[in-house]
Image (cartoon, rainbow, N blue to C red; front, side, top):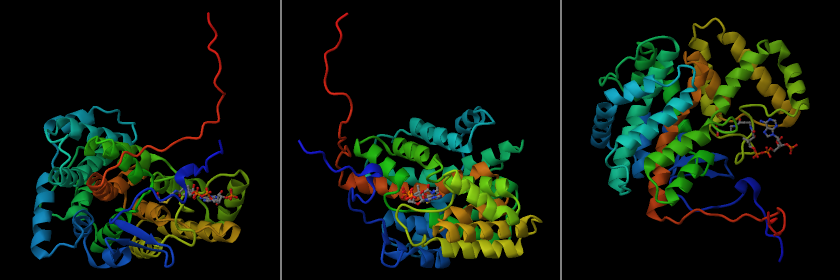
Length: 375
Ligand code: CMC
């Protein structure tokens, strides 16, 4: 028999169709339900973008108001949730907290096994509303502080800052954060979304699929890269050392975090808008380290392009932006989860609409069949 063609990493393989989003290769652009993501980020709130991902159309004023009211009402954690999550080791990674939280929400939800579209949309909205409360409580716990209850008078992004820091920053900072959430929300069959679709394809439940997706996103080749970017900036420190540090890292065959992409080979379409938001953040930041970090960030980007012609991906500007907004580095990937949960759940619902069990083949190259020693 002939050896089948192997697509390691499923690179270049079309596993299914989707109506949620696409990367248009010719123009290197990303669209959600047909709208260019940079236009959505510039003109619509993150709540409106989430509605679009789930429902296929942007909401009108009335629909948006109802959506926002429903989201605000679902934010608080119940006592069991707060107590159980507070029992996790303080030292554990916030992604572990989120993974556990979603699993717990599933265990508590009597609709867990209802895979109807209405039930799954309701669960998706509930996750969307509650995950920021979990992330903010852990951000505060890391600093030895008590959680702050959500404020239903505040929008999604403003409320997150309020729950993390007890105050809402300048409008410009909130806008930058919202832009990052819109850009992170959806990206077709990336590793975590595909994980969610694989789990869904067995007719398991939405909470299990999201729990698995969180595990996939945690890795540094995927969502974990935004944290790894900040770790790298902390390691290099001096902009004057950037080129030397990079040469050594490349000589050691290290992957430089925040650079490269499986799909975009001529630059990530989300980067220019996020870089613009980061530039505005640097310009208005009162963090004394901002100018140095900005210089270092640019120096590494330029050196990487000179050496390897590899462009930054979204995690490169987002990592530094989250640092300048005041978040602890281990909270960066959980923020990515708060956003990507919209894309994951849109794909879970789509998978169920035309489900086929995802079960590929493997070409065996182990030991040929042999006798079991009788003993
Ligand atoms: N640093 C150094 N070399 C790189 C990098 C990088 N970040 N990215 C690609 N290359 C090189 C790679 O070594 C290979 O060179 P060669 O052909 O000489 O072996 C060539 O470019 C092609 O790379 P690849 O690894 O075959 O490409 P891939 O499509 O399998 O990998 C990737 C994509 C994202 C895993 C990879 O670029 C990477 O590891 N980047 C760093 C981690 C990162 O930033 N991840 C975030 C991805 S985007 C958003 C997200 O999901 O959060």
